[in-house]
Image (spheres, rainbow, N blue to C red):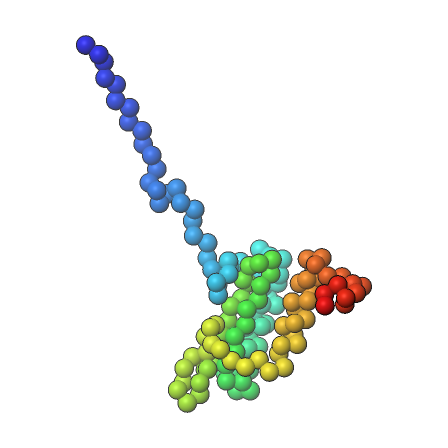
Length: 129
């Protein structure tokens, strides 16, 4: 008579094997200011200043800010209203006019290219045109 040996192997549940989901803000991986070498108090000032402009001074009806560092989101803040008549909330995906703000965005993008070494300040413009 042949001998039958049964081997019972205990495998972990597939959920236990899955990587834990990482928190996200505004579609980016989230991080604390300290995790990316930033000051928590500096981020708090942005939050406080935005709320002050929107809620107390009422100098703007709404605003959204995203602070990214090393590819991670440290702050995603939307406050105020997008449409005063309808009283719809200003959200991270609210579409609005940037007016003169594009200069700051272009500068930030250019500084990123400088940091990456993609461009240098002494590069000839002919290289890019």
